[in-house]
Image (cartoon, rainbow, N blue to C red):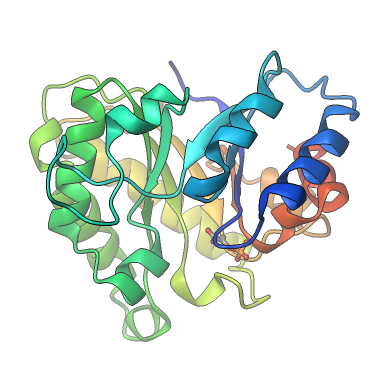
Length: 249
Ligand code: PEP
């Protein structure tokens, strides 16, 4: 898989079963002719099954918002790769800033999750991004570099072409404040450079932007050279807004 365009919906802890059905039934009626864009829906664990059924025979794919890195055992409340694969779920978001900030997910845990997903031939969407303080103190590059190099420590020499990166500045997530075009462009180039100077081919990796993407700013953001698509939270809960974003990719 070479670089391609993605439109990923992160529904977070929102939709129940009737919300999921109503959204995806509407989605199914849309003219989804933009074959260049891969659309992935990431519902809560409880809605994976319903989502899988509703996406059956469609070009959209199923993703999870998290996974645990052990195969099985006494890990109350966790979900394994095998369980996800059983449902036809191959994509998994890891290292989301909400997982990092609220649930204590560390760079090392992201590394274990990435190792597990790649060993299971699944497709990770690895989220990275700086906080407001880190940006204001000129640490953005250092943070992105640390997050990536720890996460990818065991991937050197391996094929990581199915791995997608989502650059999500923490201060832009769910705040209505979108990073500027220059900030996004610089960060995406910086991410490609980090890969290129550490034994990976950064030019082949798809890098998504996430952080208050809406139907109103998607056109402008999708024109940034190094942006290969979006990871969308809030606006992915509204079928019309998400469809408008998809259409602008
Ligand atoms: C996200 O949760 O990954 C995200 C980008 O959220 P929002 O689009 O609401 O900022």
